[in-house]
Image (tube, rainbow, N blue to C red; front, side):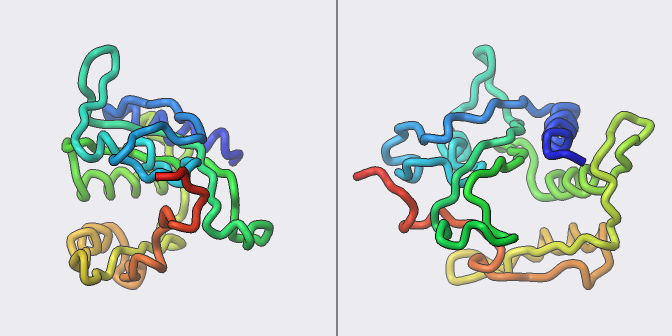
Length: 187
């Protein structure tokens, strides 16, 4: 399935669940001094949404919306020396669905599972990617000094998968960080 079809299916899937589909913002970050990371480029799909994740209302046609979906263009520079192998990219689009205080882990996880595993040609119009659930493995945060282990998410996933398919990993292993070594704007 081409990436354009995956993007289209993702955005349609979440639009059907009440999400406003928002456009990808400029690859060069906006000037949200004191709110967003002062990097020159958007390096993660959530980066342009930081002001809204911190409580600023997101308005569409003058009305506040609580559910968003996007395909955000991103540029990674933290591991740019590794680009060119089979696991490192520089430019990519990150698909994301966002709740601004409307739903939390149970809905987010259930919808992710549906999108990944629903048949491509689902008769109810809720087509997904048709992935075999037996081939999916899930990671959740194992906790650290700043945040506890995410057993809530693990338990929700275990309700959908066999137990061995859910593993706990630390933040360094399972996340992409906005690194200080990224290309940054002066303070």
